[in-house]
Image (cartoon, rainbow, N blue to C red):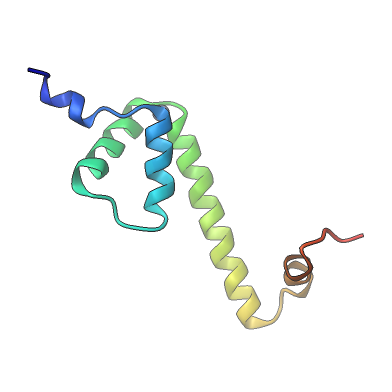
Length: 85
Ligand SMILES: [Zn+2]
């Protein structure tokens, strides 16, 4: 019989997938616990988590700026899909 701890072990690839999935939905408890354990033991994945959090904050700010109408330069690039010339 496998030790129970292996049920909570995740590879970096799996942890990254969980971090991305967490942006869209709440994780189930075993995945949530496994991700927390992985983040405590891994050097790379917390950096990826910080990048995701930074991206989420930037997207939130961009949406708010768009609603306020004071981010013409940013929204202009996003609307056209082209970088400024
Ligand atoms: Zn990792």
